[in-house]
Image 1 (cartoon, one colour):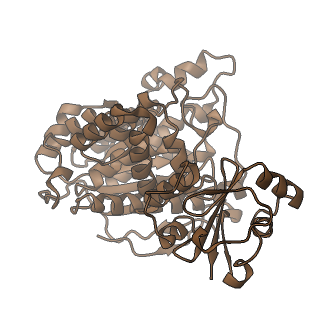
Image 2: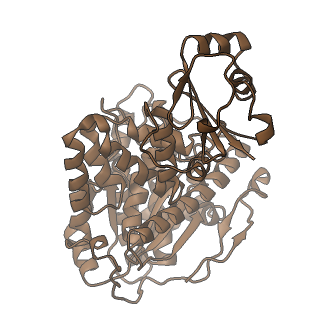
Image 3: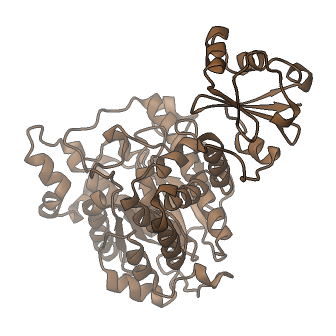
Length: 493
């Protein structure tokens, strides 16, 4: 099975018609899918010796499973599952808090199970009350459609990057990937049709028990009917994916447990009502990522680390993990990477020898950056970090080409013809690349000994100094550091 191409489809809103995207469904799955055995990756360390459920629990990536023993037994039989993880387009980018359930699904996908990324183009209009004290503000149609397109592309790119990252770790039995939007089945669903065929199978007493509902009912703001019924819509999404693609596992953050449990229950009831094969479905929740103070990492908390490189650059993304406190390193290595657990133990042991070197943080940052932005971006960000923050560049052994590649498309890297730089006074060169600085301030910085140049970061305190050959790395890269952290790189062409 493969997805073929991008198609346009209407959504019921004229402003959205030219924006929505979906992947063509090239094969429809029944609930009685055939059972296949899993191929072993070439790298023996990539496959856990424990069963997958126990392995994910040991990594700390699973918080709750609706029926862990049954799921373990199902996977032990070699059943290839179809799994899904969804996100409503409430913003134009996912954030680092969305990573954990997607990575949980990736763990299944890299062992041959199908991965379905769902965009909540319909449910975003209703609003999910989970984890919120007040009702979400309704998003305008044009903004919503822009967000849908961005999240759809980003989720596909993220999972494809995750697959490439997994292959680099030795996983070769990769399951298929598809991206869907729930507006495709909700746009033709009438309210009376839903209530008549689905609503009769929803139990209000169970809906009232959900933590997200209880929390809002007891609050001063209360809860609207729209948000109260959100769990019913998400439950039907699970059933639709189950009936259409054979999906039997849903992933979500721990705050989604109630919504996911509703889907498991509704699917079971509709299987019986519609005379479908009785195949058990499962919900798997993951822990919420929090800061050292226990604050949730999410855009609503005001501290979002975005997965869109235009909002949080790969280097800034990398630096976020480098700045994590030591106490969080091992936990995040287990949850956010595919590194074998024994390798993580070695990294942590090395880190503990001298925590000031931040060995664990750099290992974590490189791996997560590779997953989110693509294999190789972690190495580039690491080189950037070393060049920017090391007191000396001696002993690094990076070539000019490696450094230029690491800073590609970064504002700190500028290209000039050699004739415009060589034999020019240093202060003039600095003025070319640091246009925000006046010549007076540049002279003062030089006179105070705050300018360092070349691979050895030689201090220059002479305003008449000209560019020297030994300042050039490989004859083509001039490194200038102004003060402690203002780095300027000049590539000579």
